[in-house]
Amino acid sequence: MSEPFENQNEQPTWSEPKNEQPVWEQSPNYYYKPPKKEKSGWPAGLVIAVTLVCSLLAGAFGAGGMYLATTFMDDSEPSTNGAQPNNSDTNQSTTVLEGDRGNTVIDISKIDTSKLMTQAEVYAANVNSTVGITTSITTNFWGYQTTSAASGSGFVFSKDGYILTNYHVVDDSTSITVSMYDGTTYDAKLIGYDESNDVAVLKVEATDLVPVVLGNSDNLNVGDNVVAIGNPLGELTFSLTAGSISAKDREITLSNGSSMQLLQTDCAINSGNSGGALFNLYGEVVGITNAKYSSSSSSSASIDNIGFAIPINKARSIAESIIEKGYVSKPYVGVSVATVSEETQMYGLPQGASVQQIVENSPAAEAGLQINDIITHVNGEEITGSSDMVAAVRNAAIGDELKLTVYRMGKTMEVTVTVGEQKTSVQEQEQTQNQNQGQSQRPQLPFGK
Image (cartoon, rainbow, N blue to C red; front, side, top):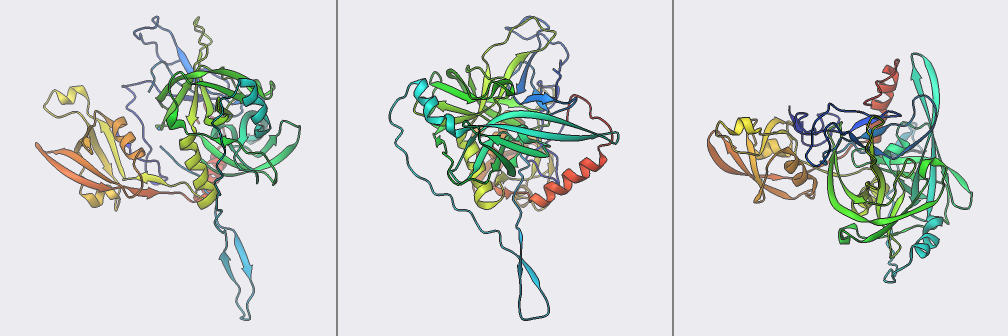
């Protein structure tokens, strides 16, 4: 099974071979139970799921969740903000419409966060910067429209009204409402999002909000104490839960082919916590809570305190790109790859990522990569399969050179690929969504979107 290297509308998305690992499944109100498979360290037949923690409040089919089976295992179709036309009258008989979006400049202010705080102090300092998010979702089933509501959490990114949350909290919503701790509510507009990284940027009409202080998730250590503030179950608003960082860079692969590298925490994370802030005890946001492990209804196992959060460093770069540029830049090389199986290696081929498809005029095509090439190393680091190749490109910066060691027809050679940029316009996203909605005349299966 081939695995595309980056998400683009013109090409397929990354996905791991389904015979190698379990995957996430999306579901509004249902747990997915994959085929029973014994795992070392777990009882035979035990089924465990990780769900994106967006809370469904009403409606037969609401906001979707996602589920993951027992094995732990990041890429993307960002939405962008298009230019708005500006009428410009002239003395001529013809009027020309010229886009005048203007670039938003983000000013960075340094805040002293050297003081270690108690959990109560972190809560008091940040509860006015956290928000509840409620959305309405209208779905057309066989010509009948049903409306459901879903809730999640978020936090104030800037004083002029930018809010960060998870994409799955606002996915497919027809209206978004943001609620503050003091009871003030705002109608919010979705400015942009990065679906595969589950980050969305909202905007409310306000000028005097209190933003959070952003930390550095790269500086976290396993065992560091953290607290989460959010709206579990959509009704226990502005609740604090406490715990620690249980693991860093935990890789989870989704059923749509994308994967994420997340922080693992034992803070209690429940439905409705999605999009909420994860703070360290210096009062800095270090992550955005978005998922948890939970047992299926048919399992006797009780799974507690295995939650996940998006590292704030990744979410921050995505949000700043959406606000400043109107789009998200992603590293791009333009290939689809598949892991070389153990059976194939028995015939003398090396382990690595086998090139299955090359996008015309892409960086990979310009560098001379060919179909059936096997990439065994990137910048000297061994590639054991497609996921390693995904990570190598994902972690590269646009313009970087990747030196690939390639096995081709019994010979080994070096190929240098210059990483390109991937971006998608909001108009393309909206056209795709409108087409999909027009074709949605029957209910979708509960597993999948």
